[in-house]
Length: 544
Image (cartoon, rainbow, N blue to C red; front, side, top):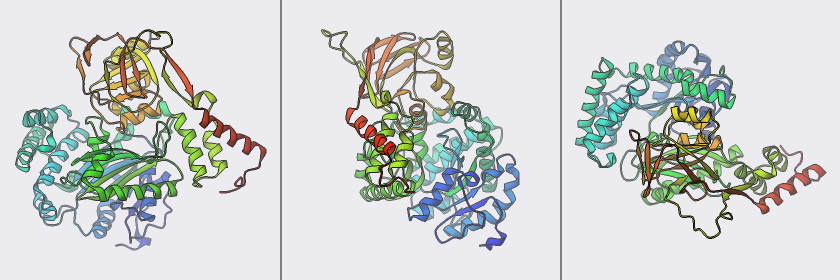
């Protein structure tokens, strides 16, 4: 590895046993995602090595290529003992975004960069797993086609549907995946007008440019506008050694919160998908499962995760939203950040962290200072106006955020914009909701989807925006041509009114009143903290 004095500015290496450059790393210059990876690595959590290209290069991405390929990539290869593009021991990487502030799902990520016809055999020798290799390769072609070449996702998804014939794609064997990969290569060439790049350096440079370019994508610009985020800060790009959640029965990908982001209760809140990669969970296109599946397929990884959660909260002093992969039964941490939460959860988490000695009373007061009494409660259905009528839901879904909302059914952004302009309350109903729908998420009062996980990026954003969100409603069918939906046994027209209960996931026809039910014990605890701090009697008042 080159000496520290010759290390390029605005490049950072995250790896146990490596020396970081003399320039002090910070969230501002290496992005919060990479900075948090660095902190996780320093406290001994299992983090795959990564090379980070600083935010400095957002406006001039071409300027990073020379230092990346001459110095940075060499250091990463030395850290992992693999060679990018090698036919025998290939390094396969992900290319991930990471701004100084969290922007869930608004910037691009590419996985499996470095796979090509020449390196397939090498990865097969490394893993002994032909299914993993061909699954990763076909994923790369589709991912690269969508993000770098600008191809529509549907052209690859249509081919998957043709091949699977209704089966779960995770059940395809390696021969079927190999054939699917060859079909993807043909589809890419047909629609892109050129072959999928077999030069791994071309793959990597294209991925880096695409991630930097995503900073100015429409959804990212809209999100920054809504959240009042400075557009000049830019994003970093992390080139990280791949770990494979699609490696078989003792593998998978997951997203979790160290505490319940809806209620704030101290319990792991995990979505996990066995034999899958991370994008399957966060994209909103797949239904995920709870931690029970993880405990059954990889019990050692679950134990590692429980221990890691304690370390995360000890290091970051807050509830964390994290992403992880399990490969061959072992846990790898890929990301952590302070988790988005409801006002109720904000109060409970701050008070619990204080009681557990993780933060002091002054910090707990700062985190709850803006909360009002009306925030410390849950909006619940009220049937007082219908005492003789039993209200029955027509269906259930998985709640991703709490509360109750009533509104007109809207099936797309055009309907949302038209009716919102007339002052109507609206519920967006989609097969799945993605972060590119940020403008629609802002207009809607609630969201209901047929597919998706409660930790998908879109669900996280909906929760952040204070929207009631139900995902994974398996009985939901949408007919866009007729502008109708079927939910359970009920058939409804666009414009009909429904009610979503984010507390238990119930869906009702018509409008049902709701009432705020205060959490009196939590209110009592919060008032006691405020009284204690205002009187100046906290023993920890001056603690750091």
